[in-house]
Amino acid sequence: MPVEFSTDDQAEAYGKFAEEPTRPELERFFFLDDVDRDVIALRRTKHHQLGFALQMCTVRYVGLFLEDPLVVPWPVVEHLAVQLGIQDPSCVKRYTERLKTAYEHAWEIRDAYGYHPCEDAEWGRKFRTFLHGRAWTHAEGPVALFNQAVGWLRRNRVLLPGVSVLARQVSEVRTIAEKRLHATVARAAHARTLRCRRTWWPRW
Image (cartoon, rainbow, N blue to C red):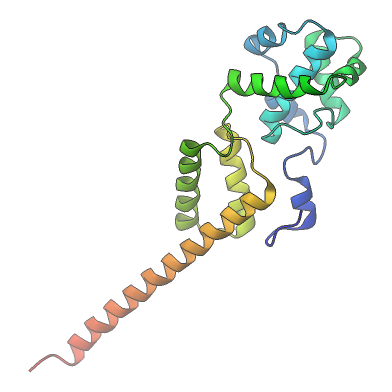
């Protein structure tokens, strides 16, 4: 869905794998530590273990749970399979045979790793505070502010909202910041005008 300040390609890439992760990104977002392995090991089958790991790492990298958790670049699946000692990564294709499995795992991952829904009131306030502060203190265009918003949400484990929702929030915040700036400049100009008048036309 295109947004007013972005290209169709940028909007289309939002909240999904736009391209294959680089090697540094694989090592950062798709590395399974001991805690991850302990959680994954609770799954009984190899395809559930691999599917669970895929969802766990996808939300770290993308910022949300995919509607179809298997729509990922194949090297990502292979990278996780190697770490889990799964010789046949294609077994992950069985992960979505039961429709509710991926949904239940997403909730478990959310609770275990402290992800917050975008509708959460507390985190919504924190996000708006960040967004307003960023818009006021940085001379950024809308695309840059949008990208900063995505980065903040991912860092703080707040699941990304829909692209149009986030785009609208960014636009509204920029409008408020611009009005505030114009008002500030107008007040400063008015105050300067008054000082000049008092200097050149003092009261007698």
